[in-house]
Image: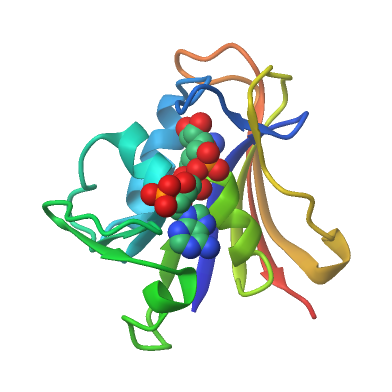
Length: 160
Ligand SMILES: NC(=O)c1ccc[n+]([C@@H]2O[C@H](COP(=O)([O-])OP(=O)(O)OC[C@H]3O[C@@H](n4cnc5c(N)ncnc54)[C@H](OP(=O)(O)O)[C@@H]3O)[C@@H](O)[C@H]2O)c1
């Protein structure tokens, strides 16, 4: 099973200059608990923004280059990444925009943290057709423990 997990500002921004634009402790925790124990699949730029493999997860990095990255499997396409794991395993596509764009048509589930604030950045989540997805969970926070704007955790399952 293929899941996408992403945090998106309400104007669609997901990052700038290869980094995140916000620090929401609750979202970091949600990401960690949701993905721990599962494979995570990411583009080379997202790997570079993290700077290290995520612990307790098999890390797969997609690149057109021949790279060796300690603690990660490097593959040349999203399909190759998916083929590494049994179909019943929940795989998490964790970004960035280039990889989300390819994964949207393949994903079964979408974990979306929607930040109710606009951010200026150079990277956006691709357009996605809400008709293809059914909202099955939504939890809203007025603000974070150390974050001033509202955000919500939404979970969607593919409906068609
Ligand atoms: N808000 C969030 O939840 C979130 C999550 C993740 C990332 N981000 C942000 O997103 C930004 C990075 O996203 P991005 O779109 O610039 O980069 P990206 O998707 O992380 O990585 C792009 C790289 O992946 C490789 N790639 C892409 N398509 C490929 C294909 N079809 N076949 C083989 N390799 C392929 C290429 O690597 P090579 O150049 O090595 O060939 C390409 O340069 C950063 O700002 C990051 O902070 C935000």
